[in-house]
Image (tube, rainbow, N blue to C red):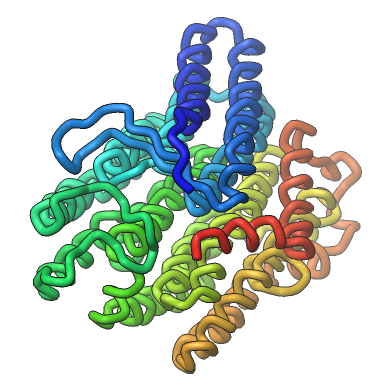
Length: 489
């Protein structure tokens, strides 16, 4: 059943107001940080208020403005919307608390700008979540790109500006060069930019030229460069010059998740599974992103810088989401979409740990972290748990992802995809296990003096531990998100 309601505007409006309150509170740090945390909590509550309606099988629609026939600034909430909306709003709470400890410990400059841009990035993510069509999706997608640039270039040094420039050129260049033409072609062929109600049928007519449908599809995949599919991935490692909480925002909360969410939304709600199946471009997409899964994992093995290794891990892990959807099988699609949740909690934990290590001991290189588990038992314990999730080991959340992806591949009898998933799991273990081993088993306790045995501030450690424990809970009790995603079918 379709419900007409302005509820989708509530979380978007709360985040926008929060960003304004942060800016006007710039000279009062405590108040500025309060608005950030309070805004995050209220946003999450407003998102959860929409869950009962969607759980009952309804969709929420609201049109704010009609620009032309078939082109509207409209909003839509369904199970896919809520998955991304819940993850981005809930993880914003963790990031807001963590930000306080990180920014104060390092006495970072331009904190008001930082907090405001952080909030507006979440504003864009919430807008992307509830977009009812490609026009709305495009607007909010671009907002994320523009307002995360100051975060990437935050340090305002040569390295920061270089990373920020590459970030903006990749994301804005692909959105203008590929994504915008894809929207135009879609409108010419269908007469609408709104999403279809059914994930099977899509919006393309049966009489549409298969060649132009395929061209439009390729333009969409290339246009959503935030998904970091190779070869359009290089902006992501370069963006690691940003402060660690920004890296967490980029990798776990807003930016890259917006990319894979947008691709998933377009595949399911613009093209539909039937046409992707008929044209054979679903499985081609699965094979294409399989290269990214394996190649990025191999590169991750070579990186000694912790954030760089995590960055290439993200490049690899994001493609699991697209691979699952591209299988066009209900089980595979479920595995892909649930990885938006599972990867979010695990990857934010890992980046938070990297930031805590730097704040407490000023270490960035994995080779320098022998025995650091003795100095930071809570941080490195959380890191170990989250890395198990990334590997896909039970009972942590990542196991649920790989279970559904493997079953989805087996259901369509696609052995090459099964091999990719198994090989990538071994590669995941190859670049994560040595970090934990080095932290707890390679260094001796005696090499750390009593004054060195210290964690980062509590405002950093508490979000780290809680996020890692949630990864464990999601692995043992995945029913809520599995049930929610099931409402799509």
